[in-house]
Image (tube, rainbow, N blue to C red; front, side):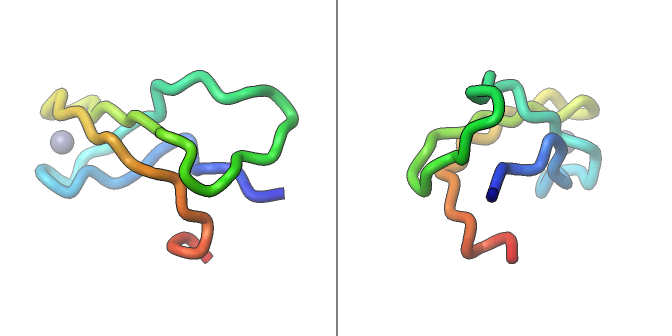
Length: 56
Ligand SMILES: [Zn+2]
């Protein structure tokens, strides 16, 4: 099962961006699923399209 990471390194400041999209529980996340991360340090928002191939 491939699921997006809960956290992600902020490309702007190197801080920790947290996934704020609520994912369906115990379900595979399909490629193309829209994800939103927000950085805890600089508060930047990142909209990402889930593409599991990029993370393997
Ligand atoms: Zn940041």
